[in-house]
Amino acid sequence: MDFDEAADRLYGMVPEEFTSARDALAKEAKAGGDAALAKRIKALRKPTVVAWAVNRTARERGQELGRLLDLGRRLRDAWRTQDADALAEAGRERTPLIARLVRSVREEAEAAGHPLGPTADLEIEQTLDAAVVDEDAAEQVRLGRLTRPLSYSGFTPAPVVRPAPEPAARRQPAPKAERDEAERERRKAERERRIESLENALAEAERAATEAERGRADWEAERAEAVREHERRAAKVETLTAKLAKAKDKLNAAEHRLEVARREETNAERAARSARQRADQARAALEEARSAHE
Image (tube, rainbow, N blue to C red):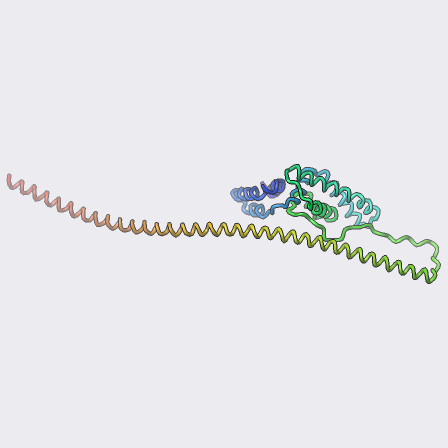
């Protein structure tokens, strides 16, 4: 068993089986003499229900998910090359494809006996959207080892607006009114772009805040679990310490008893030798008396 095999097995399980199975695999690796592998397995975190549902979909509907990941590659390539047509085409495919996959994730969760709550759609959508625009997120989703939903904190690629080409003939200077109107339109467009940029930044900041809050909640739960385990271990240590103290008292008593027994055994052996000597002397005297009488 290697790490990838262990991770694939664990993240394919329903959430309630994860912790016990992880600990068993870590114990198996340690018993096999691979302490480093055991430590890596033990460090794997239990996925949230939404993350588990996305992981399950990656395993059960890999072809369907693959279409989304392929779309992401095309979108990122178009953004790098500033191909407005390709960006527009990918953008048209993106929304319906993500919507279908959100339904697929729900169906897979329900089929496994874990129907998702009404707020799960947003987390699923954010995770899939992150897989479209971010290459690292796409790889995480493809592997099916998410521990929590993802969100993208950068700017989402959008079609590039190219300026219209200048006509061949030189433009005639516009009247002042037209120039003023053009300037107002330019400023208006600039304000709108600025507002749109700020709205996008706000949306991404809110997504990042939501993700950070989920992370905080995960670690809060982890801390609470660690506190409970610490209390259980401390209570067990206290019990064992009390038992050890009693055992030491009994050992001391047994050692004292052994010492007394050894001393008394020595005294008894000495008394027995002395008694045997007196008996031997008495027997010899009796035999001597009998011989003289005869």
